[in-house]
Length: 262
Image 1 (cartoon, rainbow, N blue to C red):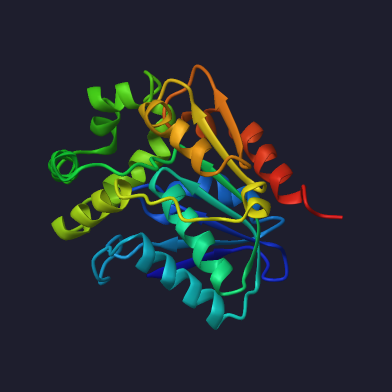
Image 2 (spheres, rainbow, N blue to C red):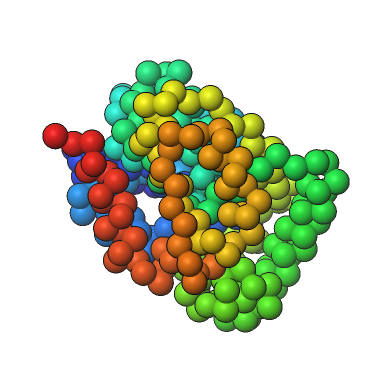
């Protein structure tokens, strides 16, 4: 795993976790602003850059982040932020950090899947993901932006998703079939790690009420983490609010970061 850092090391620490098949650059529209006031750490998952080993699973990817924090003597995290699969890795990371006595003040997760699916479903999704990545390897960003599947994914606002799509197109030639399989497995084997109520109270989940992940997993999240904070928004696709309303979105992130400060 590779770690990208931005900002002043003396500032509060924010860890940002990307979606599936995305490089750290997919979150530049957020961390370029946050780095003015925070020390931002954006891990590059295994399998997502030249010369790395394959992506492993949620537990091992999270363990490498914990090891990095230990080696750099970091004992307090202001915020863990995650998009889509990054939200699931983020929940596992919180669980592991608690066991290592590293404090997590808050967390903010957007569009996480948080599902446990049967073997056949995972096989179908692995085939779809593999086909998508293979197709991306031979097409430009402009071509991918105009895919019908992207239009459905983004609720017709495909251009808004350009920062994320650019990252995926850049990463597609690097990702192996084994990494694709492991990422699919990571997305659909979520096991809801137990978290104390005090920790749940500082976790924020946000979804568009029209995205598939909201309809399939929201109820399970509330049952597992009843003390957490849940927010739904209307009129947006998966992750599109964060790109289309970036200034508002950053204000939310900053408000979460400062809510526990004296």
